[in-house]
Image (cartoon, rainbow, N blue to C red; front, side, top):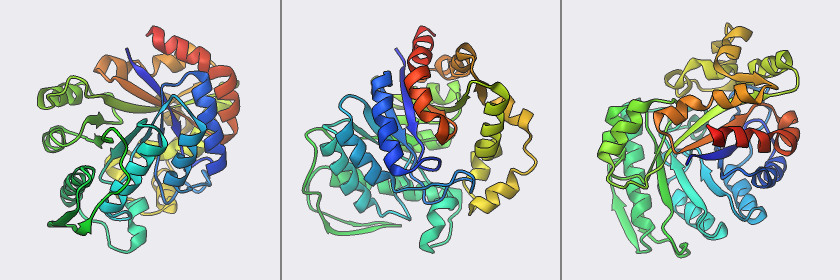
Length: 322
């Protein structure tokens, strides 16, 4: 049975609002909530970018049942992996073992701010793999000294650990990244409904309980044209693809790169409007590809409360029937 999640999108809502939305998502029946972890919004129109980890700490106290997850955090530049190990362990404690640490190689948009430049993709993946190794070592609870190619840790130790090890999800995009990360991560993270990725992961990963976690934007609204307009205003950056999105440095760059994305382009890639059957059908490719978990992104801050209170329970019923 597929688990369905709700996305706490730090780029389009303020931190206090996101905590309230998390409570509403749990009440609506979502199985888990994922949080983006950004320094900038994708576009200036989105208007927010609070600190995800502080917000998740509040969400851990405000909710009781839902699993929580970063989707995803980059543990290589803006954060040192030692700090990520400490933060993840603390969230594991605060959430009573409901937290999954989702990790990825990051985007220039968020990581360039510390002034260390932006490495090529192969180096970013090398850094991510080493970071995962450090985090897993520290989560054993022992004092650790690490001298690697990209990171150093000097007599580091995590003093407060949850009763169960924090599970790790790794964002992958192809065969090469699966071969590298599947032996070290518990779960697969991907944003495309690619059945080949799932099959390859299952072949490499020995644990049948390993989850395949995807994410898809929708834009519910009572007026279809208005919903398409909102999706275009806030999510036209989505059409660039992840290879482009990983390298652009600022919201202004995303605005420039997406200036020729049309309303019809957005409407063809993001399900918009009031038809819940249409919204549910847009998720079907992930189910057919073998994903065990799918997180929905409801586009637009102003629609969240109405979506969670009045729409999400019925939409979840349709999704579970699929």
